[in-house]
Length: 166
Image 1 (cartoon, helix red, strand yellow):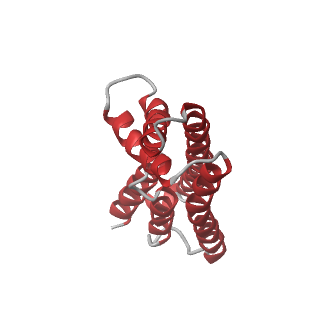
Image 2 (cartoon, one colour):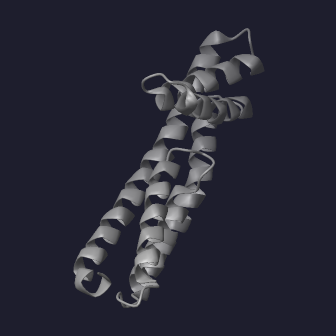
């Protein structure tokens, strides 16, 4: 049973890493679940401090994930069309077989969304698209760093209790 929980926990950590860039997956939350699964094993004693602090960080990052893009878009004069365009462009960019599609897609999506909103003002659309893109990148980078930290913590705990786990 411990091996199954270990495999499921590691899978959650990896899915969380991928989810730090995909808008449909809550990356840090899934990574936290992977970390919590590790503590459900019989070999690893429960450390509620680590789980509690990690959960608090996950909640804060999840709230900021909704606040930062909206603030970034508004600061650069964008609209909700830019935010939607960023998310749609991200999905298309990830699925498209082009290099750096996960970066090109959100910017082009935001630009197209802003041009749909106001076709006549190209400069405002470009500025708003840049703001929407920065608003996408900042929380994605924060989520990725947190997920990498959870991965490191997971590996460290497994390494520490490897004789009991295997």
